[in-house]
Length: 98
Image 1 (tube, rainbow, N blue to C red):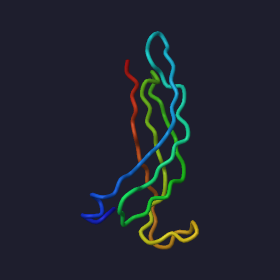
Image 2: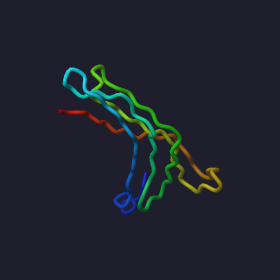
Image 3: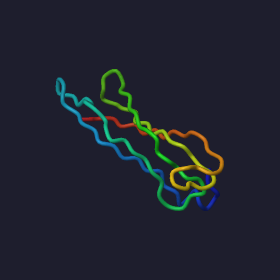
């Protein structure tokens, strides 16, 4: 997605809030909210965050947080993409431990 030099200096960032509680002495997720994503550094391809979601495993001690967005190879003017665009997805896993 990025040139050899630009890819090294590009960071994908994701932020979210989560809450948990203890059930039978073990931590379990209650919710994950406010999922956002953005790029920092130098990049050839622009990322535009569209939405976030989460899923929990059966015991609710692990969550997969997903940020969905659009990559643009070109420019974005006033929120309108000009150039080649395609859908993208970033995943982060989080596990609670004692």
